[in-house]
Image (cartoon, rainbow, N blue to C red; front, side):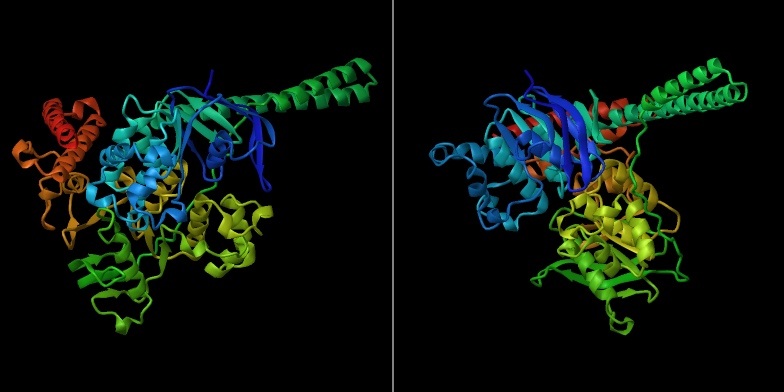
Length: 582
């Protein structure tokens, strides 16, 4: 028997139909990636499975006694002041809390938390750590099925490594996971449910293969639809001609044949192959090149946290027109503080800018990862009207193009999903045409297809962009330069070899000098230098990424001997990690 089955389920949210006669089954041991456009109903589908919502039509059948673990997208506010250890164990009944504290400690250690962090209030943790804590709460219940709603959001590379490692364990319970992270989906899922067009498309493959198969289905559907429409058009012309002849020559046989043909046309019309409507995401920024050698310069700048603590220092970095710069660093390094400092400086008059100086012609489009501008009860149309200088006709047309039906324009922006808010903010860029985009984690709330379309749009020649992201593939495709916050300094990382080290061992990059490149020989790290658990983990992350990158190349470009060395070193270090973790 399936753990959860949906039979002909239909559900409507306000004026929008999300599902129409949708049927799907979740089996024991399934490792499913649930993907789809923002607003397609992914979170709603999980809520229906969990019993939080009832379908408008159809039936949801859950195996009797099934234990479900839920991982929410956002930390409940009541957990903010509670210490990490207490917030996790709180999901257990009081009687079990007295005897199962060791399980919490083992689980937190396995997810990368050290003992000194157990007493920290949840509010003080990074976004990725909060998500890991919510994941721990769900796992502690020993569920038979995990429902995961974007568990990898806001995670840096270290936190993501711990999440992937846990979900790859052979004894992990079955799960269905919403995610916009392609690497995470490809690493841990074995089945993909694509939610689109009020229905699901199921593939027994992880995301990248499923995406290719879906594209092949779409291409075949379009060809079939075109052939069907050509046949219908031919029959319509024939039926019209027969009806005309029957009338002119008063021939009942011809008139009867015309009516028979019209019935056939009606049947063919009702049976036409379905073709997807796709997504409305499109961002086309006017890539105006300023007549200057720089957009802004950071010179002897010191960036501080809101409490005044210095986070890092910049000697001199120049941002030129057309640069697409990724701002890199672990969570807490100061990326968001750096962006806040730049936005505040840009708002000052030019003669009051000192260590950070902007060209006076710069117009910034700012995407904040928390989407704080949506804490408003304004309608969608009123909110856009306040954010842009566009006229009402342009706003209405743009809203419809970007997937907001006319009947929804009076909805409050506060109740929009994260993906809808992100899409609306991107739409304001389309309307206002800024010449410098500053984007703090722009892909956090955007669906996978939207993310790939955003990549393509951000790569247009001449566009100037500064952004942060934990999505490695997004960074690799979009960025042309890399700035790295490391050991209290903001420095430039010049090539892919050094960039790989940002996600692995940081000890290879100590200045902004050009590195040796990703293909340069690198000796294995002596085990005697791996007594520090942090360095051990960093090296493991680096080796795993090098293996994945090399194996992703075409066979003739791979380096089997190097792969063998990396695998041998990785096996040794994993053994040491198990010993130190035990």
